[in-house]
Length: 68
Image (cartoon, rainbow, N blue to C red; front, side, top):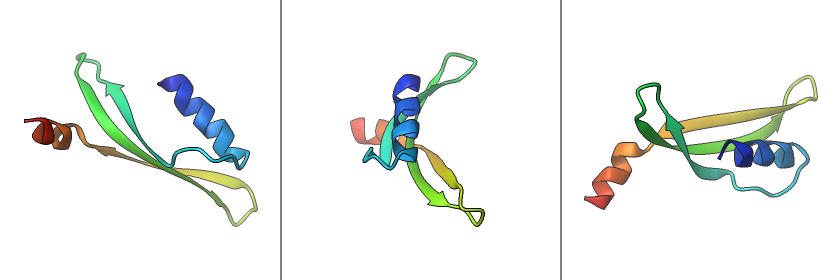
């Protein structure tokens, strides 16, 4: 998944069409896995440079509730 995130980042910066929302598993030091929804966009800053904005929302328990 790390490779995919990196590929999305590069493509997004080039202006290519890539998903703006996608699930992402994050592994904690204790071995637990948490699932996050990544919401990513690119904006142009006041200096004219592209800035990547990303929000990660932990959806682990939401997914567990829907699977129960």
